[in-house]
View 1 (cartoon, helix red, strand yellow):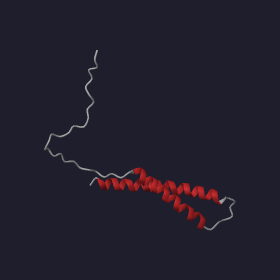
View 2 (cartoon, rainbow, N blue to C red):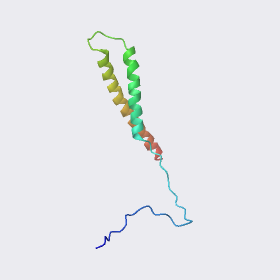
View 3 (spheres, rainbow, N blue to C red):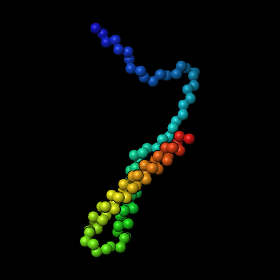
View 4 (cartoon, rainbow, N blue to C red):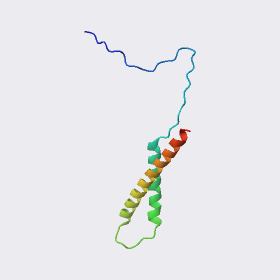
Length: 93
């Protein structure tokens, strides 16, 4: 018995001479915006912690830097995602 399944549908070329008009939508890449936000958050965290006046609380600078970097990286990622959403909305106009 031969397999009687039809071939999978693929892109159909328009007939010769027929013009098919389409619209290209330039949507932003969300991953790039989020990664850029994380990087900006990390870059801002380092000088912020190093230039902030130190208090004698017993907490090491490494712990303060890690917590500040994590917080600003998350905030940067959220801000980057928000900017990507705004750019996506504008690309639909």
